Image 1 (cartoon, helix red, strand yellow):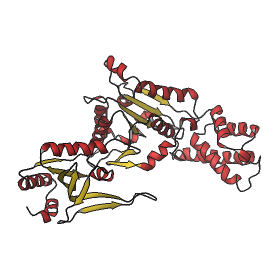
Image 2 (tube, helix red, strand yellow):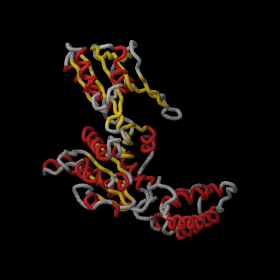
Image 3 (tube, one colour):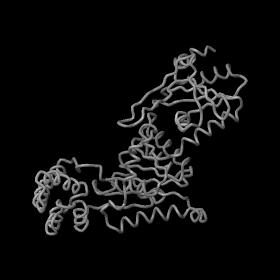
Image 4 (cartoon, one colour):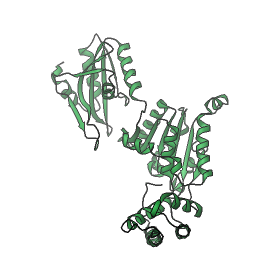
Length: 408
């Protein structure tokens, strides 16, 4: 085997035979050693090295392809081995690791081969890398046609609090208490032979706090969180569903977050989703937290079967008292409404969602700040409320919906 041309020769093979070609050639070349191969998403050897768990040297007799990505303003540049032959020093053991990235069944994945003196060493290294890198620490794992970590989403979630939610106190208390009781009751579930898993669905019109509630729950529970953005993994939605639940089972207890679940799961993939929710596989410790603006679009088998989503909470439009509370807590100092003005605006915002109330406060502040006189906010906000009501009617008539999905 010509090591210098090995990677390029391998990548010239058809995708259906590529992994077999590499496996056979390596077995011929390293007949007296052990080779462990696989396609494990948790085999993040780059993170393992960054965290000081091993030392890596690229074999310089052949060209190694390294992908360099800009991760955003203020973030570190990230490097990933696309196609490479690595020499790895780990626990005084010298191993070779071959990495090849190619498209198979429409999905781009990275395959690995670990070459070591014995099967035990190779398997121990595989286990060490996966066990070190798979726990979700100070990040949110996002599934968007594959897994990636999101520090930005994690930081946004860490600022979310139940205290910032203007909702009926009974609703907030019921949701928090239910999660708290569930997580504290594992032994009781096991005692009575009940699967220790939970499905929670938040429903209601857009703009009424569902997204904020999800963030507050994730922050409060402090469990590993898997956020599903797009289930199409390149091999179809069914494969994406399987990959999400497989990872959740390995990291339990954990949360799977599926916002706008009605748009995530197409009709032809519903049976796969139902199977993963309560099929033969054990979902011990897995909590699925989903939201939808349109529960009527969901298959009754998803939303009505207790074994799937056994807790449902509806988020209504804010009532007069909640609108009043929102207006009183969001404005301060000279920008505050008078007591009479606050009640008047609360009356004028009947049928406003929290998203519209947020827009009302923001747009009023922008106008008021040009002439920041105490007491002027009453006039400004009453005028802005009328303008927003007109915009809301236009949006509803055209079917475009709410101003923003951020505050669902």
